[in-house]
Every structure is written in structure tokens, then in C-alpha cells.
Length: 327
Image: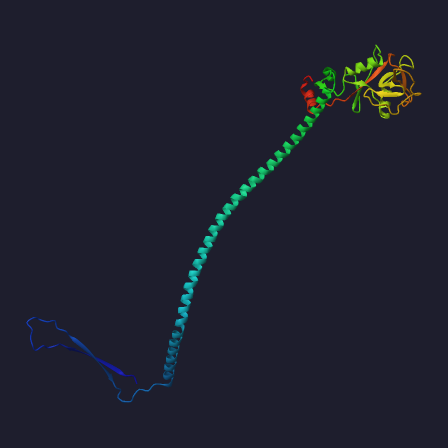
């Protein structure tokens, strides 16, 4: 049976026996009275077993929630502290990462600048090495030219006379310096002049003629040279005439070249004759190794002059070919 509740309202006003001359504000007090109307049977209400079970479950759940809340409170506090710590750590990591990035950017900029400078220095070094190689080649060329010029100068200074015009030859490209005088024939390192003109000369006259070119009568010291001379000569007048060479008899059976060196061997026809003031002729022969004869130095014959090849500086020859200046 449901209970019935009745409500009523009572208002009380305070009363003061001592009347005040000053009117006072009246206060009203309200009281509420609650009355429960009993059922007619006057039998207390009974609670069902389901309700009691439900109440117990609610109370148990409420107690469990209370206990869980009390137990979770420290965990939530630890989580809160951990969250604050992690947030601070993330902030520090972000600050460190920013600092590292700035540091890396600065050093990368410096590295790039150093790399650019290194590349430029390397390119400059390569250019300097190329320039050095060019200068070394130029130095070698100038050294060679200097040696050639010194050799040419020594050759000229050793001569009592030097006929410059004899070493010039006109070509289509101008005037060119030649290694041998005009009408002379080069063979190896020597130049030879084979006289074929009149008048013929004595051995002494022939030697003087050669000396006018800074040369001397031919000195034959090898089979190859003798063969070359025999090829360039020709027979004339009779078998007793030939070409004077630079060999003469200073003492009996002592044959000496114009250089002062004594003869070793020789290319005699029948051996040298014995006599005073004998000189040697090279006559054309089918056997070039047997073509020397001795006769009086006063006999007039043709002659053979020999002089060393004049080596002109290569740059001078090229200049002669291009512009054609006089030697």
C-alpha cells in the first residue's frame, strides 16, 4: 500500500509587548508540516525480496565505485605527473632538435663554402700545373735553342774565316741557312767539296783554299767515307792525276794528316812510295779500298775539302723559311 503525504503551511508573526516608537519590519516564519497518512489497515509496508536484492546490488555497486575511485585517484595523479614530464621532455627534445638543426645548418653552410673554395683552389691548381707544363716545355725548347746557338757560335769562332754568304741559300720561301757551303755535299756530319775547275793546285795551294772556308783537305778514317769519296770523284787527264787529300809525309815513311794525327792503315794501290815531300792523291778506282797513290806535293791536281756540318738553330731555320731575313 502506498503511503499518502499531506502538506500544510503555518505562518507565525512575532509580537513584542514593548511597543517601539520606531516601527520595525515584521518577519514572518513559515513552517511546513508533513504528515503521513496511514493506511486504514495500519499494516507497515513490506519490502519485496527483489527490491531488497536490488538495493543491495546498488549499494554494492556504489561501494565498489567508491573504492575504485579511491584506488584510481593515485594512479590518475601519477598519470598527470607522467603527462607533464613527457610534455616537458618533448619540449626539451624539440628545443634540442631545433638547436641541432641550427648547428647543422651553420656547419653545412661553412662546409659548402669550404667545398666551393676547395673546388676553386683545385681548378686553380690544375691550371697552374698546366701552365707549369707549358713553361717547362718552353724552358726545354729555349735550352735546346741556347745549346744550338752556342754550338753554332763555337763553330764560327773556331774558324779563322767564316764566309756567311756561302751558308745562305735562296728559296721560294726566302733565304735559308744551310748546313754546308754552296756547292758542297753533306755526308754524315761532314761537308765535302770536290774541285772540278781549273786551275788545279799543288797540295799546299789546295790546303790554303780549304782553309779559306774554315775547312781542310779531306781526312779519311773509315771505309764508308772512302767509298763515298770514290763515288763522288771521276777520272781526268791520266791515271796519275787524282784528288789531293789531307795526308802527307813529314818524315821518311811517316804519314801524317793535317790534324797532326799519324796514319793508321790506309787505302793504297801499291803502297806509298819513298821520297821527300810526298803527298797523297785519291784516284777513282773500281776498288775504292785501293785508290791512294803518293806523288810530289808540287804536282797540280784537283782536291777535296772537308768541314764539319754547321748546325743552325732550328728556330732560326724556321724563321728563315717564313720571313726570309739574311743570315
